[in-house]
Image 1 (cartoon, one colour):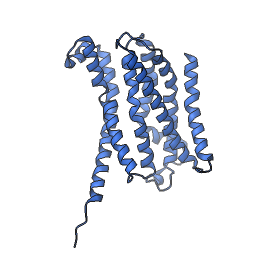
Image 2 (cartoon, rainbow, N blue to C red):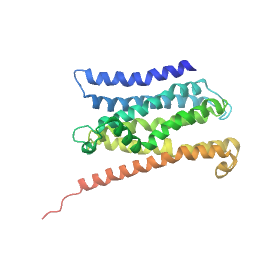
Image 3 (cartoon, rainbow, N blue to C red):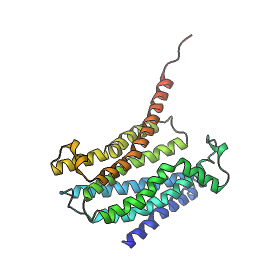
Image 4 (cartoon, rainbow, N blue to C red):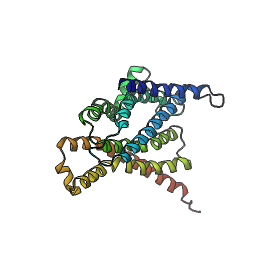
Length: 270
């Protein structure tokens, strides 16, 4: 168990450093430190998302009994991925630190000049995401590995597959950072992000309740009344930030669509 934890502790920061160094040193690229940090962080997040989704698919597809069946990959990947959430808090801060210094960025004039003030500003702005990562490590990790007692690997696998939406989110952030909102790639990625986030994150817990209802022969609307209260509480706490982030994605998609419609509207002739 400790070996897997150590492997994750080396893999994710190591991939970040390797990617950053390659982006800075490859002759055809020669990116700046800030650009390399921002893109490398998004790359590592996308790699983790692909790995988690793949593990989730393998686990879920192998469980015929959604409660009793177990798969060795469940606890193994949880142990491997826990260091990612610790690393990502640092990576997000580094992105924030360098993003404010990208030439022409709208917040450049207000960029904090000292690391301590930048850290305070970062925690204030990214509080929900940092809280999400802290909860994943301090609550979800022990619950998933120890408290479950080997039951419900199917549900854990489905929750891993929520990460399917992450690569499009990361690509969208990169395109916005480098002012590529006008490109076809940004529009296609935005549509993909909206669809995958809704399916993989917003519909996640309703689907899990539906699957359990079928398993236990309980009507869907009765499932919340039949499962333990702490399951409902955990689902609500995990789903609330997903709904908030989805609302932000919808607002961004609406702005993108309205902006495209205005730009394509023919000018009135005089």
